[in-house]
Image (tube, rainbow, N blue to C red):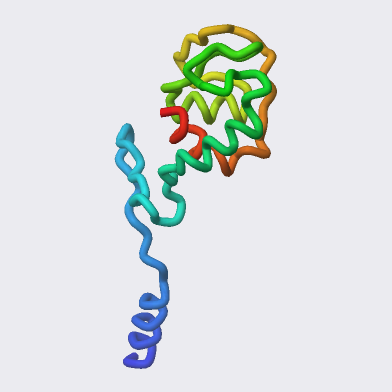
Amino acid sequence: MRLCAASLLLAACGEEQKPPPPAPGAAAPQPAPGAPGAPRAGDPEKGRQVWLAQCVQCHHRDPEKVGPVGPAVKGASAALVEARVLRAGYPPGYTPKRDSRVMLARPDLAGSVADLAAFLR
């Protein structure tokens, strides 16, 4: 009997403790900044470098000005930058300045979205 109880206790100790699921309608907890899985803040200087290398062909060198093809984008939200760069779409409820389909998705820039957003703030 003692051997059986000891086996059960040892088995229970090896189980991973999982947090309870969130209540219906509650927001999911967000990882702390810097923790694995947390969105990173972004580096404006890296974003500027990406902007100059990838975006000025259509947008103006100065993101506050209208480019030959693309609109001024200074102040764009991180959600808008992500939607436009990764999916060539818009965030839900967003009304675009220009409703065009010229911009192509650039999933190759996924690692630079936070940097671009930081630069455009």
